[in-house]
Amino acid sequence: MPNRALYALIVLFAINMMNFFDRNLFGAVGEAIRKEWGLGDAAIGLLGTSFTLVYAVVGLPFGRLSDKIRRTRVLAGGLFVWSFLTAASGLARNFWQLFAVRIGVGVGEATCAPAANSLIGDLFPIGRRAWALSVFMLGLPIGNGLAYAVGGPVTQAYGWRAAFFVAGIPGLLCLIAVRWLYEPPRGMSDTHGVGERCRPGSPFAVVLSLPTMWWLIASGALHNFNMYAIAQFLSPFLIRFHHVTIKDAGLLSTFIFGFSGVGGLLAGGIAADAAYRRRVDGRLLVGAAAIAVSSPLMFLALGEPAGDVIGFALLMGSGCGVMYFYYSCVYSTIQDIIEPSLRATALSLYFCAMYVLGASLGPVGTGLASDYFTSGAARAAGVLDSTAKALEPFRGAGLHAAMYIIPTLFALLAVVLFAASRTVGRDVEKLQVWIQESVGVPL
Image 1 (cartoon, one colour):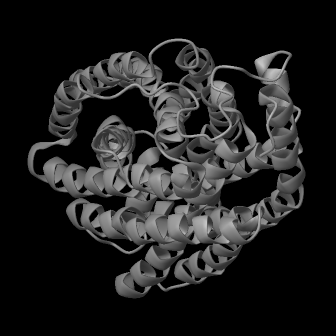
Image 2 (tube, one colour; image 1 turned 180 degrees about the vertical axis):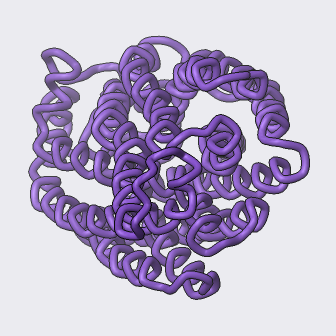
C-alpha cells in the first residue's frame, strides 16, 4: 500500500472519529440537559432531528461539490465549522440557542461522508475497498465510544457544558493533518480508466436508475433510525431502567455501542471482500446475515430485568458489534455500482435519504414513543398529573417499552438487504457494459 494512501486513510479515520464524537456527545450529556431545562424525551429527540435534517439536505450540494473540486478543501472547511460550533454548544443558555448551534454543526459535518468516501474509492482498488472503508468507519464506534467515555465523566464532574468545550479541540487539531492529505485523480485505483466520465443524463437520475440504490436507500433509513435512537437513548435507558449513574452509563455505553463495533467493522470488511471475490452479491449477503443475528440479540437484551446491567451489556454489546457489519458491506457496494465521477453524488443522495427518512426520525420518534408509554405507565399507576416532576418516576418504564422498536426494525432491515442482493448483480453488469463501451476494451 503506498504511504500516501495509508496516511490518507489514517487522517480520514481520525476526522471521521471526531465527526461521530462531536455528533454523539449529545447522547452522553442529553440526560443532564433534559433535567436542567425540564424537557421531555420528544424535545431531546428534536435536537437530534434538527441536526440530521440539516445534515441530510446540505449534504446533497456538498456531494456535487466534492465531485467537482478538490475534496480535501471541502473536508477542511467542514471540519473547521463543526469543531468550532461543537465547542460553542457549551455556551448555550436555553433550548433554542442549543437548537441553532446544533444546526450549524450539522452543516459542517455534512461535508465529511461524501468527500471522504469518494477519496477512499480512488485510493484503494475494488478488492480492498471494503477493508479500507471498514478502517475509515472505525471512526464511528470509536468516536461513539469516546463520546460516552468523555461525556459521561466530564458531565458528572464539571457539567455538560464543559464536555462540549473539550470535544471541539481535537477536531480543530485535525486541520493540520489535512494540509498534507493527498488528492488522487478520480478513478485512479480503477482498472477501466473511465476517470472523470459518467453515464449520460442527470447525475441524480443516473444514480436512481439503479434498483439496488433504492434498496440501499431503504436500508439506510432503517439502519439510521436505529443508530440514532440507540445513540440518543442508550445512556438514558441505563440511568433510568438499570439505575446507574451518568458516569457509569457513559462508560457502559462506551463499550456497548462504541468499542464493540471495532471488531464488527474489521470482521465485516474482511468478510465482505472475501464474499465479493466468490460472488458479486456476497457483500450484501454478509450484511443481511449480520443484521439477522443482531436483531434477536437486542431483543433479548431488552428482556433482561432491571438491575441486570451485565446481562444487558453483554447481549446489547454483541448485537451492536454485529450490527456494524452493515457499513463495510453497504458502502463498498455503492462504490461497486457507481462510476468514480459520481460516487460522492451517489453517497450524498444515499445519506440525504437515510438521514431524512431514518436518522431524523429515530431520536424524535423513539422520544415520542417513550413519552407516550411513560404517560400510560403513570395512568396505570393511578397518577393523573402530567407535569414533568410527576412523570419522572415512570420514564424508565416508558423508555424501556419504546426501545423495542429497534430490534423490530432490524428484522425488517435484514429482509431489505437480502432484496438488494437480488438486484446488485444486474447493476454491476450494467456499469461494466457502459465502461467497456466507453473505453473500448474488454473488462
